[in-house]
Length: 113
Image 1 (cartoon, helix red, strand yellow):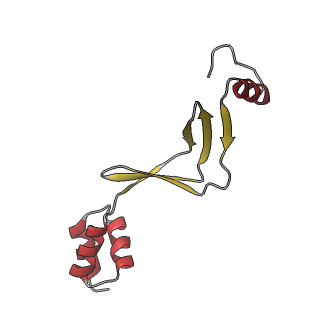
Image 2 (cartoon, rainbow, N blue to C red):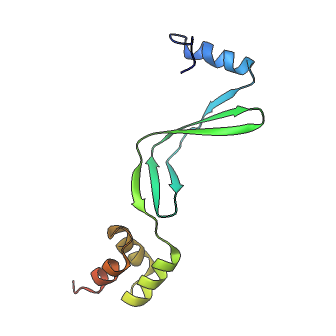
Image 3 (cartoon, one colour):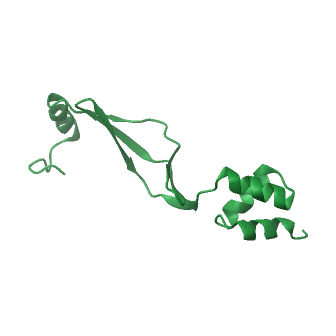
């Protein structure tokens, strides 16, 4: 919150920001935002995304509650596919269910159903 702006209407605040050369825009129809880290992903479903444009740069603000999931590499999917003799889709699902644990995914897929 900007000091001295408490109680100011959003419309008035937006006008003041525009006068300072800051343009704020709400992205519509955002379905999902994924932030990929080296070992996991943060997934925001139905996130609110605001874009602030100032001095030639764009800043994105994401609001929402993320869920964490293991990051699954294509090499891991390929290995599980080969070892368990299943489709890539089945391998990916097993990896996600096992939180990226290769051995657990392979064993789960080889279990008799």
